[in-house]
Image 1 (cartoon, one colour):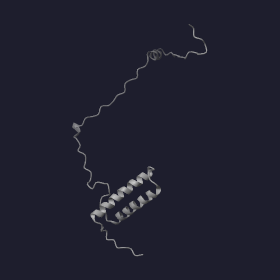
Image 2 (cartoon, one colour):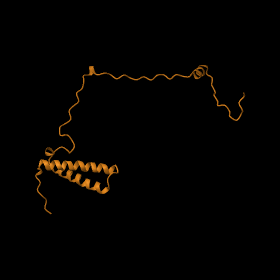
Image 3 (cartoon, rainbow, N blue to C red):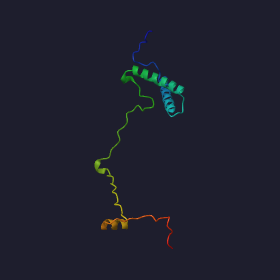
Image 4 (tube, rainbow, N blue to C red):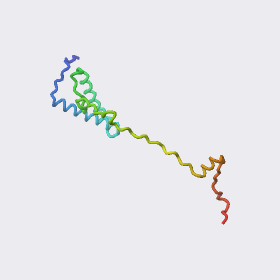
Amino acid sequence: MAQRANNGATRESAAEQEVRDQEVLRANKELAAYFKGLRTEREARAALKIIRSFVRNRERLEMDKRRPLPGVDASPPKAAKRTPARERVKPRKHHRKSREIPEIAAEAADSQTVVDVQAPDVSEPMPE
């Protein structure tokens, strides 16, 4: 089987390339839907074939001639404008409030005695 000559240039027009990019984006959504349980395995396999052929064609191109991936903005992200350090507001630290100890427990802790609180016995009648 003869291999076709590939010089690294694409012969597709811009319109064909745009249609192919949209098809790859749709296939990607189909594959995501399969993993969410919304599509069948057959539909997922068809989507994988589309994605695989796109990747194969993209690998044949030279790095500097490759277009950006579909769905990704072509321009590099702009750096966020930072304010100077002296103008930044420092966040306040939240300090814990000390727990308040109930009076009985505080007195017991001071006197080193153990306070034994028991539930009343239900089997005995209560004195009136």
